[in-house]
Amino acid sequence: MAEGMEREGIAPRKRPVTLRDVAEEAGVSLATASKALNDQGRMTAETRARIQETARRLGFRPNGLAQSLLRQRSFTVGMLTNDTYGRFSLPLMAGISEALVDNGVSVFLCNVEDDPRLGQLHVDAMLEKRVDGIIATGKRLDRRLPIDLSQLGVPVIYAFTEPDADAIAFVSDDEGGARLAVEHLVRLGRRRIVHVTGPARFAVVHQRAAAYRAVLAEAGLAEAPVMMGDWTESWGREAVDILFSQAADGPDAIFCGNDQIARGVIDGLRERGIDVPGSVAVVGFDNWEIVAAEARPPLTTVDMNLAALGREAGLTLLSLVDGKPVEPGIRKLPCRLVVRQSCGRPPGDQ
Image 1 (tube, rainbow, N blue to C red):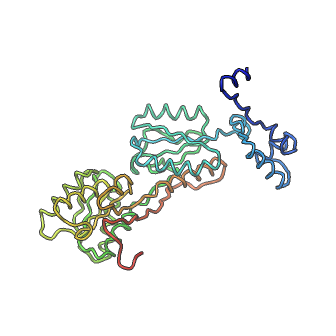
Image 2 (image 1 turned 90 degrees about the vertical axis):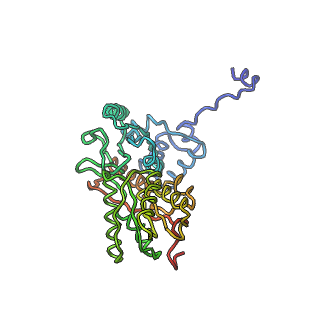
């Protein structure tokens, strides 16, 4: 058969490297090789390192099922989300995967939309696969997923979604992020700062507006009414029309509730012949690269550090799986300001 394959130009399939191959190559017993590769048993550090290096050199891959049975773990984590577009869940997923990959743990993502039945089907499937834990995430901080995760018998971490009571959750510090934006505008010397944001039904709208008002009060600046509308570019353009048709002396800076609104604001200002950032500085929120980096000029914006948030959630889930105690509660992770050309840097900043 092999000769026929060679005559036809088909190379015979290479036999997988076995644990016995590693043991023979390293000159140890099968049991010693197994213990070394599973970080078990007593042996010198040199012997363990030599066996592990031999396994890497030969390309040995442990049997996943055998490993799971040995450690009573599946080395998989489920991630549930209702973020259909992946705007928030995909950066979180990147951070979670980064935290788990070095520990040999895989992540699979399930979109529950806003359907309780679909959510329950996904959770049942995860439990049947004996996932080591579940990370729940969503498209906003003040709404729960349409599924109860409080009594599953496996560790659950919430990231960027409203958690159950006494759960462990990671969220972005929206008030802190808004402070970064408005304080930056104040340092630039802007004195007529307006806040254009999303619908009042979102909790983050009120959190960011409170920070905006607080910074203006601390700087001794007049506060303008917060303008609430949709999370869209069209609302940004409409807000510009309202601002510059009502008063002769319009704002010299606009802090926007998200990057889409900010890009609409920039477009509206350009249509009126108003220079950005010369006459009006613009700052957004989210650091959605495909929107912020492609704005003209590129948009200064607040990054919620979602990858870092996901990484912390993944590491915390690993701690729970390993049986380490973790205090319940909500952890707020800091945001960062990404400065681009839509507002510039304060004098003296590099």
